[in-house]
Length: 355
Image (tube, rainbow, N blue to C red):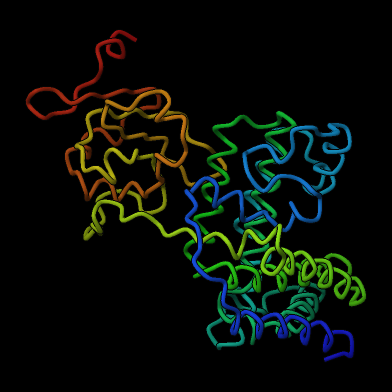
C-alpha cells in the first residue's frame, strides 16, 4: 500500500473508531420518502442545497445544473439517456464491481478471469487490488452506498431539469433506497461505505491517488458535519428507516409467478390487510424489472396515491402467493383493468371490454 493510501485508510479508520464510541442519543424517526432523500445528504452539505424534498433546490441555475447533470451521466440531456445511465449504475456500478472483487477474494468467482482479454484482465486486477484497501472497513457490503446516493441525487436533479416526471423520479429513488435498506443497518454503516465507494470511484476514473486523497478529505469533512456538528448533524439526529412489516411478515413459499418482475402494491393491502379489489396493468418501465401491474384496495384517494410512502414494490411472485386469485389475470395485456365482483372473482372492467 502506498503512503498516500495509508493516509486515506487511516483517516477513514479514525472515523470508524469515532462511530464505535459515539453516543448520538435518541433519534427522530423519518418516513420512507424523507429517508430516501436524506441518503443524498453529503451532496446537500457540499452544494449547500436542501436534504429534503424531491427537488434539491428552489432556486436552481438551470443551465449550470443541466451541464453538471450531463457531465455526471456522460451525455444525459434527455429522459432515456439518464434512465439508461442509472440502470447501468444499478447493475454494473461500483457496488457490482466490488462484489466481483469480493468473489475472487473468497474463492467464489462470479466469472472466469481467464476469459478476459489481456488488457481487460490487467484493468480488472488493478482495480481489484485498489479496492482491497477498503475490504477490512466495508466487508461484503462494499460500495453500494456510493451508487445509491449518487443515483438518487441524479434522479432529483433530472426531475428538477424536467427530464423525468415525478412518478419516474419517485420510482427510481424508491428502488435505490431499497438497496440501501437491504444492505446497511444504520447511518454510520452507510457513511463508511459511501466514503470508501467515493475513493474507489475517483481512482477508477482518474487512476490518481492524490485525487483519491482529496475526495476522501472532502467526504470526511461533510460527514463531520452530518454526524458531529450542531446545525447539520441530520445523520445523527434522525434514525435509519426501519422497513414496514409488510403483509404481517408473510413470505412466499412457492414460485407461482416471476421472482424478478416487480409490481406496485398500496399499503391498504400490504399493511392494512384489505383484500385486493382493483388491478391495473400499466406499461412496464423497460429499464427496470417491472411487470406493469398495480394492485389496490380500491378505496385509495388521489392524495393517498400521490404519497410514495403509501406504495411498496414487491415481486410479482410475492403478491401471487399472498393472493392466488390474481393468477388467472397475470398474463393480461397492458391497459387491462380488473375489479373484483361480488363472487370474489376478478372481472375485466366494462370500459375495457369495449376497447
